[in-house]
Length: 173
Image 1 (tube, rainbow, N blue to C red):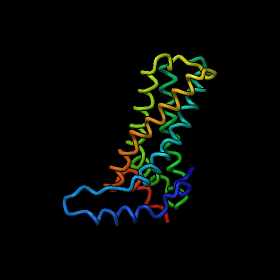
Image 2: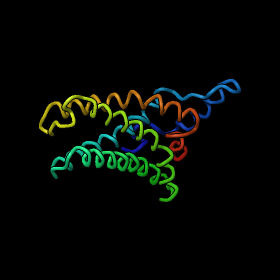
Image 3: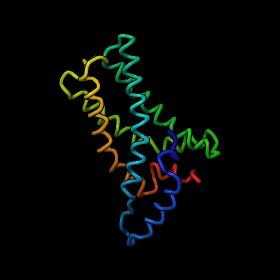
């Protein structure tokens, strides 16, 4: 999904306008809806990478550690790719688009992956559940939902300071 499909167009201006409403020295903030949209974007890439990594690792008969590492790598790859797609469509060169994606998504994806994988690691028997087990899918859904809840305030804080997905908004018309 690209950013425009999430309604991201025009938010850069509203973030900057919102910043000017604060008193000098006060920390700027971003609307919760903007933060939630940025987090949903991140969640999409993370979920694609997580599921694909687990399916591939399981199909190849890998253990928990290499499967988890693959899932995390793919979560970052797909998270960055979704941002790159939108920024490249805005006419930004590849090198600049990569810098934008790294700036926009790194902290968000890292927090999401930490929470997601932490929940699964701590959930009894979840690490050993197979793709055909309900526990696999329930623990994954719950871990991603919790990751969304924890990452949304992080994105709100970053966007309110002109960082994170606020960087991506500059490239939407």
